[in-house]
Structures are given as C-alpha cells and as structure tokens.
Length: 276
Ligand SMILES: Nc1ncnc2c1ncn2[C@@H]1O[C@H](COP(=O)(O)OP(=O)(O)OP(=O)(O)O)[C@@H](O)[C@H]1O
Ligand SMILES: [Mg+2]
Image 1 (cartoon, rainbow, N blue to C red):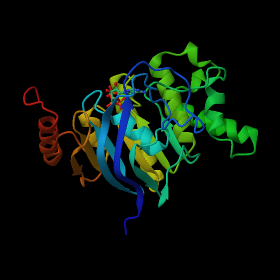
Image 2 (image 1 turned 180 degrees about the vertical axis):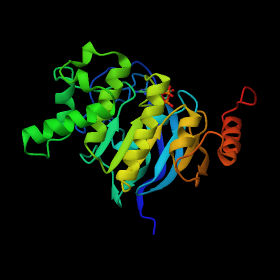
Image 3 (image 1 turned 30 degrees about the horizontal axis):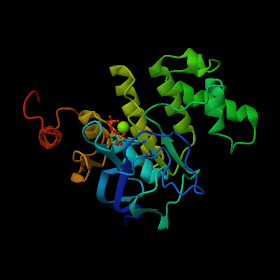
C-alpha cells in the first residue's frame, strides 16, 4: 500500500518586488520566508500558484520546468526554508514549519562549510556514528562513491565546481535521509560523471527504498532514466502543467520505445518541437 509522505496542499508563494534589504528572516520581525526579498515598495509577484502534489514514501520524483519558473522555490517550500503565502506542506501528516534534520537538501548553489576539509564536511553527516574511526571510514566510502577519495584533505575552495558538487552529493548520501531534496545536483559535472552519478542514485534508491527523493533537473534523459514520476511546472507563475508516471523497470535503456515516446511528449510540453 502506498504511504503518502509529502502533501503539497494548494501552495502559493509570492516574492516581494523591490530591492532586497538583505537581512535574514526571523519570526520576530514578521517576515514570512527565508531568503525572500523584503520589499521597499510592498508589491509582490506570484511565483508558485496553487500547487497541489502528493508524493508517496519511496517515490523518486523529478521536477522539470523552464529556468526561473519556480523549481527551486517549490523545493525550498517543501524543505521548510520558505513559508508559503497560501496553502501548506505536510510531511507525514505534520505541517512543515521549518527545516528538519532527517530531510537533506542539496542546494543548487552549493553549501559546503568552507572552514572544514572535504572529509570533515562528509563526517558531519555521520555524527550519529559514535566511533571516530568507523565514521572516517564511512566518510571515505562516500567520497570514493563520487570519485573524490584523493580530495578528503582539501578545503572546498581548493576543488573545482564539479568536485565541490560531488562532495556535496557525498555528504547528502552519507546522511541516509528520510527525504532527499536535490536541486540540479549534477549540473556542474562532466557528462561521464553524470552518467556514473545517475547509476549511483539508482543504486542508493534500491538500497534505501523508503527514501523519498525530489530531484530538480533540466536534463530530460536524466529524469527519464531515474524517476518514478515527472512533474513539469508551467512558466511563471508556476502551476503543475503535467505529471507522468514512469513504470518502466530499471535498468532503463535509452532505446526503450516507451521512454522515447515520453521524451518527445515532454519536449512538447516544454515548448520544443524540433531538434529532438
Ligand atoms: N529571494 C528571492 N526574492 C525575489 N525573487 C526571487 C527570489 N528567489 C527567486 N526569485 C524569483 O523567483 C522566480 C523563480 O526562481 P527559482 O529559483 O525558483 O527558479 P528555478 O525554476 O529554480 O530556475 P533555475 O532553473 O534557473 O534554477 C525567478 O523569477 C526568480 O527571479
Ligand atoms: Mg533553480
């Protein structure tokens, strides 16, 4: 029986227009969302409009849409970083009122701690393991998984963009979270590493079938290869344009006729009618 894990219930998010006064949000000053601009002129623009989406435990959902349509915003609302202006997000039936420890978010812009080495960054995700050498061994295992075994002693600024992204993925995987939210985690990786990481994501999901994965990507093939369901957002203000269930078993090959047909339909949904 499917268990409803995440319920996005008629969520609308508006960003205030105007210059960002760039102070952090706090519940005390009455602002209603982390990272939202504090308007000087009071006007606002709807970014997400009446989004309703139910996600079952263990689903692997890819979110697609044009740049700037609101994919990251939707993920941040589900993660509790942004409070919706209307509607609510429920996880396990509880209203989301802020970020949770057992949900891990891989940011589009990267969020390693710059004062820690790469292995120390991964180590942090393993703090539930009391024994330090066991923890270090596990951290090394996750670095190997993303081909960074030689970079554990480096600080983030010493790595390339793609390496930093891989380190962040290692840290996220090490946490073995209940919900894994990934915002274009492979965008800085070279093509071969991307293919390798797709496989690793699928292996991880097979190993941890109860982990619910929300994955934002622009790469349609990536989403077709990995996910159980695609959610396509419309252009701004984003609504759900369409959802597609993908029941093709893994491993999925690029020449699978069902996937090819779906690929064409998705391109059409995204307004691409040639160069398929
Ligand atoms: N903190 C903010 N304050 C005001 N507007 C914002 C803020 N963050 C994002 N926006 C606006 O909200 C819209 C959606 O942004 P979002 O980052 O969610 O898009 P996206 O779909 O993730 O885009 P991309 O694919 O380029 O990452 C954009 O128009 C963006 O300019
Ligand atoms: Mg984004």
